[in-house]
Image 1 (cartoon, rainbow, N blue to C red):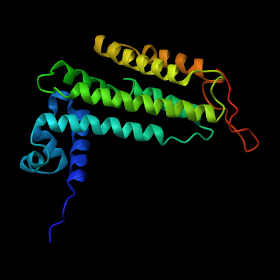
Image 2 (image 1 turned 90 degrees about the vertical axis):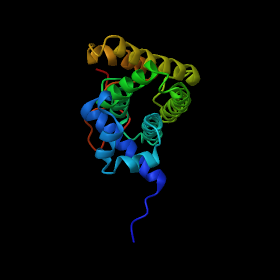
Image 3 (image 1 turned 180 degrees about the horizontal axis):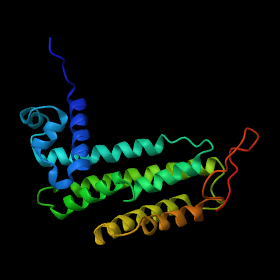
Image 4 (image 1 turned 135 degrees about the horizontal axis):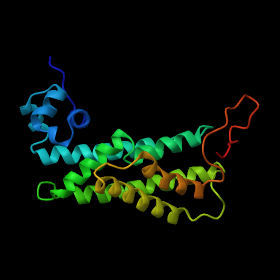
Length: 216
């Protein structure tokens, strides 16, 4: 008896295939044919799940955004907090490959609203999710005693969201010709204004307080 494939599971498999093609061939390499080949299914099977190219791309973008939100809110803060923050801001900005692809895909879809009329709605939903996730992150930092006292978390979240959108816009406006330092420095400075102590954890032995850090 043939294995029954869950419809939602198949959609997620196709979304993974979309981002694999994006990684290898860029935005212009994404088509029903290339994604179907990457997913190991026929174009007919893909169209059964996603009747249109637009629907496939919008789902894949939404899936990637929600996956990021889950990874952010599932973070643990146990001694490696600052390493986690470094990973976070490189993932959020177009410093990482994922960040570059995400930014490029969004820009391309926004540039052709005729094909992707629902992209703005998805981005608005993502921004609401990001705001929640950033607030969660800062609340966790406060609970662990890392935040400077007296900070307005809602205001700091708004500033961080605006900063990240600006950095992504700068990346696109310079056609990617901007250094990693120029992209990451504003985010590092922003985190420094929030935290009591920043940069990398001390190489600790068993007797060292896990929340003890050094400033560069």
